[in-house]
Image (cartoon, each protein chain N blue to C red):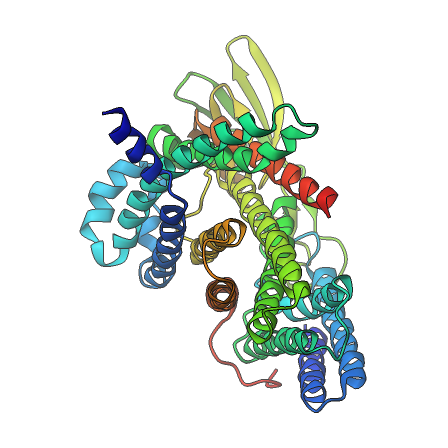
Length: 256
Length: 262
């Protein structure tokens, strides 16, 4: 487990350095550092799965987000054809890196991922619930990063396309995570919702928030700026209600 | 009169109402998340008692912790009506505008998802109202028990599968899968079933869910193997599982529609 903690600490340090390099205008170095951070983070996830299988590693819902978020964020920039030095690209990339560093730092300072897995998590639905939740959080934070780019420059088309794409994907993943949780609950306990689990309640809260945002975006009920601002609020919902349940009490880093 | 009803129908199906309800639900569930930190155990009996007995006992007597749940039910009730009115209205419009065009079925994807949410919500409500639960039944190897519908369940023994590999020292010699063998006699039928975590068995209209088992480790001289079960009869589980399938189908159609548009 200690090697895994070292890997995630390395990942967060690399991502923080990438953010600093990006802010200093060294965009190539930033990209290389970010990719190294993604690799270290994915190695951490792989290590945790290797240790826990056939069970699901516990409380990975926040600590696994940074590498997935940065990896998918960089892929989203390529997909939308945004140049590295374009203002909307910079805004989006810096926002993604900042979200990743915040989530990663919180996961290291308030860890909860040291718990041993429990037997009921051998269910495929438990595995899917975690995987879809991590993908969902990453996509929704990417949508929020596109919203920051829109607030900076509302005239460019790429951030609007990117936001809607990330929002739809994030919402789909989040929904699939909740439905997988429901199936797990049904197979494991015979009930559709385990009401006494705060993480499930918080996840449902995030889901309803994004149902509201999806309706705002698809019906264009608010102005572009208002919708983008609401999307940024969604990032706060993901960080507090989505990642919060996977954080524990403060623990000094590197005090293993 | 018709004009008033029409206006009321449109107001009930307003998209602005949907957005307001969703944001209110998000805030309420956020409050629920905080409340649960203080009163987790109050919600545990709900799956055994059903929703209404729970609301009038645990719920009412612990309002400081459960108020969010009352608000949740009220908001979900209004959302149910709003979703039905909104999606039905738009479904009629979409069908009228698109049914002669190729690929018009894909246009119905959002409506399929909306109706699926209604089916899931109705299924949840029915599940907590009509289900019957007999929690915490313990049974030792060689013993049997009778279900309320007369079916007999005998616990014959374990065929345990142990933790393999030395990745987690805490799990060495641990029983990962007990494979509890049960003989089920229901009417003229007699069959052998294997019960595990996440692998319930169905006996007539009842479902048997494993809560716990012992021994957990490979040791000699232990007491007789035993299992603890929850026995549930939930006639509405088919409703919410159908809703889940419907939602996934609608979501798949929606994502496919967006992909081919792009």
